Image 1 (cartoon, rainbow, N blue to C red):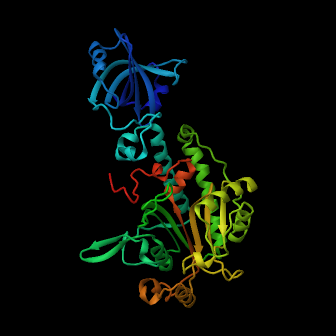
Image 2: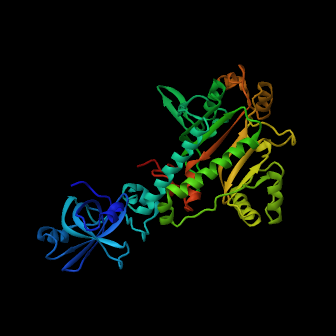
Image 3: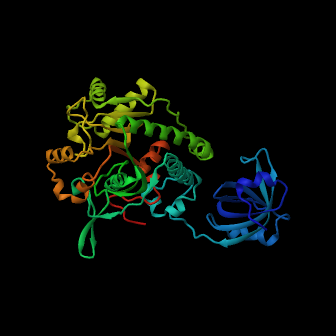
Length: 435
C-alpha cells in the first residue's frame, strides 16, 4: 500500500490508507485510545477501538511513547465535531522506532523550554509544525528571491568563503590557519560581486554564508548569517537600486501570501503589501527623531534605539512597515560608497528598515579609480595594499551598485519572531559553536 500524507486524507474518506509519522499525543480511555499523528504536512487525530482495531495493535498502544515513529493502516471518516473535520479509525498500527522518555525538551506549542536548550535539540524542536512553518517560509523566500533575480537576468555566482581579500578593516574577520598561512572567513561577497560585474556578467547575485567576528549579544546579530547579495552594472544612481529592491520586495510578499498561506496562517502572520515605500534622508530622519527627544549629530549613524523609534514614526506618519533611509554621511559609510553630488558630506547609499530594524543596505559604488584612491586615503586606507581590489578599476569599470540583505533578519521580521536565532536552524553566536 502506498503512503498517504495527512494533507490528502480529505480526498480519501472511506478508503483504507497507510499513514506514517510521529506520535504527537496519546490518550488512553480503556476501550478507546486516541493518538494524534504528525507528518510533514500536518497532524490528525486517529482512534483505536477495542473490538474494531486488531487486538495486538490495540494492546500495544499501552507501551507506545510520544515522538515514536509509527505506521498506521486505517480509514478516514468525517466528524464535524472534530477539530480536523475528519478522524482516522485505526485498523492496525506498527511501531517503527520507539522514542525514549522523558524527552530533553518540550516541543509542544505550550513549551517553556528556553531557546538555547531547544537549539541543542533542534531536530526535536522542528517536529513542532509551527517551527517547521518558519523554515518552510524561509525556504520559499530563497526560492522566490532567486527566481526574481534570475528573471531579471542576474547570474548566480559562488564566491570563496576563505579569502585573503579584504576591503575594510580586518577587525571583524575570523582568522583561519590555511596550511600555515593566515587567511579569513569572508565577511562579504562584495569584492567578488564587483569583480564579476566588471567581468562582463553585469548582474550577479549570491545567497550564501557571511561571517562576522563581532561579540554582539543581541536578538538581531549572529556571527554567521546568510546574505542575499546582488550587484548591478550600468545603473544611473542609487534610486535605481531602491526601485529594484522595492519591486523585489513586493514580488516576495505577494508570492509568499500565495505559496505559504497555510504556514502564515499557522503562525498568525499577516503583512500589508507596500504600494510605495517612503524614502527619507538621514537629515529628515534625525529631525523627526529630534522631535521625539532622540538627537544625533550631523555625522552620526542611527543606533538600534533610533531605528526602532523611526520605525514607529514612519508607521504612524506614512502607514508603512518599511522605509528607505537615504543619504548616509560619508563619515559612517565605507570608502567605496559614491558621494552625493547634492551633499558633499552625503553618499549615494541607503538602508531598508522593516518595522524599525535594518534588513538591507545598498549603495552606488565609486567606479573611478582616482576618486576611489582619494576616498580610501581619507579613511586612512592605502589601495596599493589591496592590489586585487585596485585592479578591478584599471581596465574599464562600469558604474555599478549593490545591495546586501540579511535572510535571517528578513525571516525574523516577517514572522515577528523575538530572536533572530528562531529564524536560523543552527545559529552561530559568540557562545554557540554546536550542534
